[in-house]
Image 1: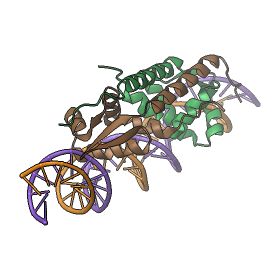
Image 2: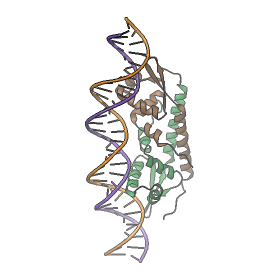
Image 3: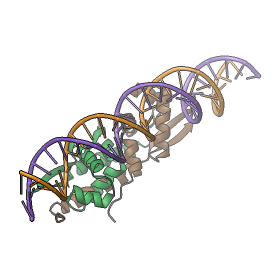
Image 4: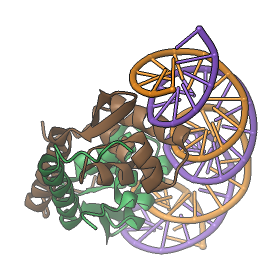
Length: 102
Length: 102
DNA sequence: CGCTGGTATCAGCGAGTGATGATGTGACAT
DNA sequence: ATGTCACATCATCACTCGCTGATACCAGCG
C-alpha cells in the first residue's frame, strides 16, 4: 500500500486556530501567554487546543518557571510533506491510468 | 509572510474516508462505482464526499457516458507538500528562537 | 417512448467537537 | 503565609459534520 497518510495529524491540523498556532510556532517558540496575545483566543480555549496538538505529537512542551513553552516537532511536518509529495508523484504517474467502466 | 497554509484543503483531507479516496485516486482514475466497491461506503455517502473534494479543488470530474470519473489534481497535493516542507524548515531554523517571558 | 442503471441532491438524525465559564494546581513575590 | 499569575482540567452548551434513506436527474438501451 502506497503512502498511508495518517488522518490523525491532518485532522488535528484541519482546525484554523490550530493551524494558526502551528504557523506561529514555526517562527518562534512561544508560551501560552504569547499565543493568547497573537491569536486573540481565550486562554482556556488555547490550552485545550495545545493539549490536542501535544497528544497528536505535533508540539513539545518545555516548562520554564511558571511558563510553558511550546515548540514544534519539525519531523512531523517534514513527514507530512513527504507523504503529500509521494501522493502527488503517484497521482502524476497515474494520471491516465483509468480503470475500465464496469 | 510565511506559508499560510489554507485550512480548507487540510480540513477536507482530515476525514479518513476522504483521505482513503484520495489515496485510491492517487493510484488510478476511478468512477463512483469503483470507489463504492473499494471503500464499502454507500453511494450517496461517496457522492457527498466527492462533492466536498470537488469544491475544495482537490479532484476533477470527467464524465464518460453515464459514468463519472474522478482524478486527482496533483498540483494541490504538491502545493501542500511544499507548504509543509516550508513550515518544517522554518520550525527547524527557529528551534531556539524563544521569545522572552513577559 | 419507457425502462434500467449510474450519479447527484435533499432532508433529517446523531455523534463528535470547538468555545466558554468555573475551578484547581503549582510557582514566584512580597 | 498569602496573594498573584500562568496554566491545566472539567462540565456544559451549541453547532458542525458525516452518515443514511428517499428522491430526482441523466444517459444509454430495448
